[in-house]
Length: 269
Length: 294
Image (cartoon, rainbow over all chains, first blue to last red; front, side):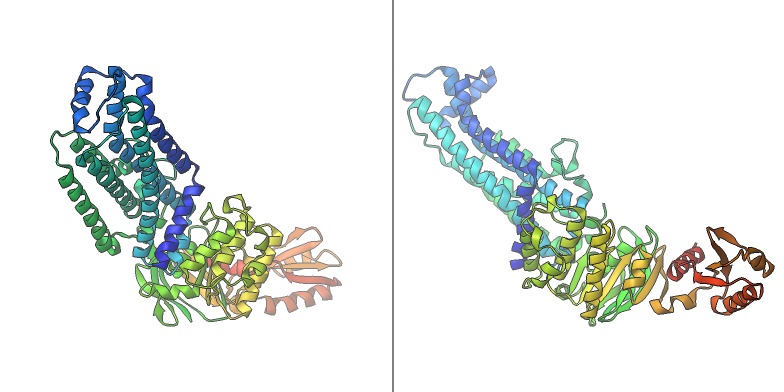
């Protein structure tokens, strides 16, 4: 365990070392903080979005105790309903950027050699990097989720004069499903970065849609967004499946590490 | 004893084949060879970075890939600037010591002169300072075996000299050292044994003191004397090249031929001021082995 923590420390330090990761994290957190103020802007909505948002008002437990313009009300509902998806998106992108930077840079500068020459097993290296990636993405998730929750609650109180009482399904979506999705994105991106390192092309942020690393890593997020837009979806069941998926991913990583961890592939640039 | 036994190593395919080397405590083995001959690949395998396709790397009879904990007794200094960034030197050393589950050997900081840069970040260091930090990382857990990939490459004269002095001292302390180098005078100064690698195969290995015995080709000799010896030397059948006040000829057997040449020049009234081998024996050997190989 000491060695896993030491590997994780090596990689967590990269958060400080990477300007792009810091910028990405700060942008994510800032956007999370600014998002609840969308109603101030009086953003116009298309009729379809408008009707969808109207139908959400009751579902998400918002009660307007005072008269407010319709577009402000819709703005508040929009912020509140989109919060879980946006928190998940920001945290996933920050995790992806961090992982592609850290693994990409170490392959490029050959710093990986120092780690591979150390008396640590392949599994300890994988767990160490995983621990660093998960710690970083969970910290980002916690910060952005807190800002979202506080910001949107404040916005609702300010505009509507009432404290929101979100239903169980909303809470599951935000507090269970969202971190599980970030966890899955993180595990998937680290697996690709370690087992198929050539896909991670370098230390720059790999967010281009043509990049297979980004596409595969963000797959859980795409599935999540698709499922969220499915009417009548059972959040509890979805969260259970997501937890199973995380457990299966971790078990598969542990079992297949000795077959998939290829030191020669990691070193050759 | 550190031993490479029938090692075949590489990345996508085999680059280095059939390598057998034994490094005893106190010995310095130098791996010489041109670029792309497989020096770094072999050192990476020896350091436990990449497993060999075939063969074993043993430390006191224990396979380092089957028992990675034994790598605690090996220190590795990769080539260039292969070092984790974003850390201060002190922090990186502490984290690496945790990986090796070792106490920090603070004596190393003085020996490698990194005490004054302990609080600097790796990114702000010069190439020479980074190489010194890499050497400290290789030494800080007090290893028995040191694997150094071109330890003095791209260093200024003073830093390279310090590095060489330190390597000599480490060998004296009884560490087994296996290093790659392009620098022939450096190998002559440091190594007890030399291995020449060419196109992935070891084409020569012996004690450095035996190198001259293996040179089959001509040896260049520089002669300086009171007059112009070129006519006399041509009479003896040697081709002569003049370089300033020196005359260079090529002999097949220095010890046999030179007394005859000097005696002949003396009989012609030419007083010899200097007779010296113009070529470096190790360099000649390397050139010869590479010519044979190609």
